[in-house]
Each structure stands twice: as C-alpha cells, then as structure tokens.
Length: 423
Image (cartoon, rainbow, N blue to C red):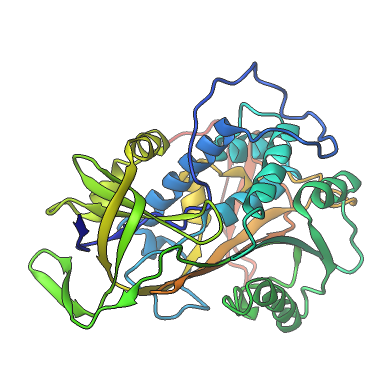
C-alpha cells in the first residue's frame, strides 16, 4: 500500500494516543476548592472535550478573514500559508486563568474548554495526570511542558493560586518590572527559549507589553522525537498539488513501514507514524482527491476523530511525503472570543491570582508555534502567553448623562440623558 501525498493535513503531533467517551457523574460545583494532588485515573471525558476544543480552535484559525481580525505579527514576519498551532499550550494557559477566575469569567472559560461539568479539583487533577502521562516516554525522546507566572515586584500571588500552581502545574513564579518593557520581554523570551531548547527563541516584542501590565502567564511546550522506523530522502522528485491544476516539485522522504496504524474513510486516508520509545504518533490525514483540506477540517470534531482512530488497523505502508517546517504566530483573542470567552477580555473577574485582588483583564493572548518534520523525526515547540492589565469598572446599567464636547476649547456641542436604551 503506497500513500502518495496530495494536500496533506497533519493533525498535530499525536501527544494523546487515543480518545475515549465515558459518562460523567452529577455536575460538581465550579467553586469547589482544589485539593492536593493524588493518584487518580486519567479522565477520558476531559480528554475528549479537550480534543474538541483543539478542533474548535483549529477551525477558527482557518477562517478566511482571521488574518484581518488578528493583530499584525511581531515575531514571525513572513507568515507561512501552512498552519501549526498547539491547542495544548492554549489549554494550559486558560486552565491556569481558570484557577484565578470567578463568576461569568470562570464559566465562559470552562465552557470553551468543555470543562463546565467538572469541578476545579477534577480539572487540576486531570492536568496533573496528563503531564505525568506525557513525561512517561522520555527514554528516547524529549518532552518539556513548563508553566510560569510573572508579576510586578511589589505584588504577591494569592496563596491558593500559588499552592495549586506549584502542586498541579509545576508553576514557576517570577517578579518583573513591566514598565521596563525591553527587560520584561527579554526575560520572558529567555525563559521560553530555554524551555524549548532554543527552538522558539522569541514569543513577545517589547512593543506588545503595556507598562501597566499586572500578570503574565506563559506556557512552553517542546517535543523532540525520532521516528520508530526512519525514512530516507528519495533520489527523485514528485509533484505536490498545492491546489487544483497547480503543483510544485519536491524531493520527498520515503519509507516502507511495517505494522503502522492505517485507516480509510469516505473522505480521507489516515496513517499514524510512531515515534521511538513511546505512544506518541504523528497522524497524517490525506483528503480524497478533489476535497480541500479546509473542507475536511470543517466536518471534523472529537467524535468523528475518535471514530476514525477506532477504524485504524496495522498495515504495511509504503509512504512518500514531503519534509516540512512551519512557523506561525497568532493573536488568539479573536478565536477565543468566537469560542465564547468574552468577559476575560473586558469586564474580567480574576480575583484569585494576586493576593492584592483583581488582576484586571487580558489584553494580549498569543502563541508562537513551530514544527519541523524530516526523515529523522519531529521537533516541535510552542510558547503561549497571556497578559493582563488593570481597568476601572464602568458599567452603564442605569440612566446617565452624556456630553459631547471639544476637548481643546472646552466647548460643549451636545448633551443629553439616556433613560431607556433604544436602537
């Protein structure tokens, strides 16, 4: 069986080797205080919901107008037509924010992640077990998953946030003067660079840091893994069809693979490429001829993905595919707003991050992600950061006076009273 590459979609690096569906017990309260870590089985329902969040996020980033809705890139100036994102990096930052949130802010983040039916304790235990599972296969590969929080010199973390952060997320805490934007960016970038083994040297530009920043939460995710069955570089070129009627010539990598997971559906073929020494897989999903990869993704969700994986069987596969390297930068705020997280970027409630009180609202949420796949294996990294700034609450929920004036002269042009909203 030979798998030719015509418009490949790589569904990330298969850090989670499967998806399971189970029923959940009665809904616990979201305000339940987190306990200390304990040995718990992996929560397969939360895995399923996290994978659904991953597909939801990918679909948002594939929207034709997304480039116009996000801020211009500051790190990756030449944005590739290809796409790579780490939904897990976004998930960890959002979950840390969940531990500092209350009220509607908490509810919106939890719903977007699919965690609304779990208690905060269950969510934290899930992420602890997830980290333990991912780090289990490091004999012949390397995986780094790290989290950090950055606060102003005179601030301190809320005791509960600090305790939970250390116990469940190995959270590293640092103080930094955000008013010195160059130094703050240098330190955050250096942390991300060190955690990703230099693969992501920069995630933020000094110009993106507001001097009044209160908190920065940063996740770094890095993977370096060798193929279980190495490929070789072909001594010939093939056509890669970038779109209907157009192709480019590439010199691919090729290999005769024994007993790798393979499946075929009405819309695609899937092969799982295993890495050495663990359960990590890179699933390569090839749309049928005539079906655009964007159309394939549009019909994907966690349930269908689980069904596809369940159909895969060990096969001998003669695989030919291009080597590739992709680096992208995303302003994730428009995507997260479309997924229902609204209040966190405005009238936010984050009273449980700092000991002094509310940590403001999120004004920056971005990720720099890079992946390189060649005949030897895969190297992938992502650094995700969210920054908050303070705000003065001003909720016009009762009759008010308005005045339209020329500030330079002080002259009033219009004035009036709103007793009942109209229009």
